[in-house]
Image 1 (tube, each protein chain N blue to C red):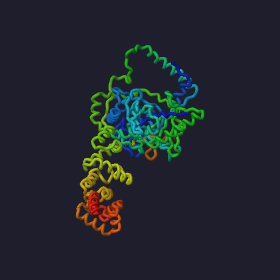
Image 2: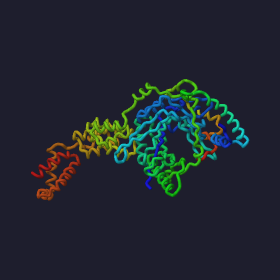
Image 3: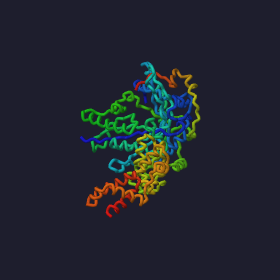
Image 4: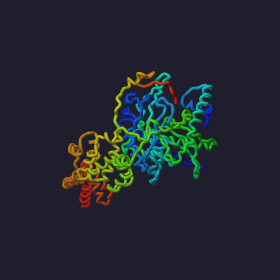
Length: 95
Length: 477
């Protein structure tokens, strides 16, 4: 499977990444190489093997429903670029 | 051409755990912005989600209540999209293997028939934060208190055929989650909300038409209105030679119309993949059995029992069991006064009317179940008539004490002493010689006049049955 520049641009847009034409060409080449590498797995014999969602043969552990996190808003907001009235501020997004 | 409407609903119900689905931050509504957002909710680097057992139990409870299969190994997936109120850049949800599989819910249609609606699946996921666009210069404010609140998304089959059916289904699901006590059902606060997939097709056609997804339906009324608007829009579009585009549309209650949300169209590629931070969720039969133990009596079963045990009509049983608390309230009243039908009439009549007038919820009503039972017991033992009981009830509602105290204080005890009633009847007859003559001359209708005069003379306190009996004897004698 190879990736062309238009596919790279679509993925970049979904990921909110800006890139110029040279970069799009570079990524198309690089990503195509990565896919080709991974495609070797298509040759693996997987008949009768269950697909797995996680490489570890383990189950999710559950925690009891209890509040364990204290309010430390001031600490967390100390590293935010902009806050006001307890809200994190980001460049305006309009629906 | 005759068109058929096809609707599928996606209901999002916030699960009422005290902590979030993947973190130990609290979920209480109405806190100051970001006071309940910890590093996991903020999407800080290096943090890991740990699944809340309470959320899993609630999801299983719902699954059991809709007779669905509980998936023994379900998987969490990342749903990727960029929005500032989703700081990780993905929502943890379930995709290929949801915790609850195919189930069903029976709804009652307007003509009384029961329709079984398939529930495709229900999956666990986290809620996003809130964006506040007003009040900042070129900025948007982000509150992440809601981020990470557990949600169960309940997806119906596209089997609903009208806005009314959709509302009936949504109401039934609303009643169910509250019975199960897994969601507070508060629609104003967004605890229970719904998206509707709506399409139309020529009647008789089996393929589905292109659907539009309606968002922002946060009341039963809006669901009905938005669907009706959308169906009309699609019919006009197709009959005018156009075609429906698959898109997300936002319902605007102020204008009563749906509008395209163009910004969402292109981003509809969520690139789901299993979340490597979470292991498969295994729910074994011991877990399911433990949850089954906690299941309360469900609305349909309770309705059937009410009809049978208390001799109520199917309709009355339905009204009294729609809300769990109301059913419990009724049972206390019925047992307390030992008159189930009288209790049903009062709970659905005077009592509900008083709640509406005062705009209070059942839990805050100034008269409790024992209080109402005490009043109805006084009707049962002939201390007061049904009419006087309404007066006593009003006084109780206004905080003037229990039934016996009010009856005593206002001197409302029914007159059942035959000689006292006879004396009053004699007075009434003596004071109305003309009517007496007419009555005895054959004008039977005047009997009602005499009853009225006696009741008036006793301020309604005479026992009506006794008055009738004694009056008849005296007038005819």
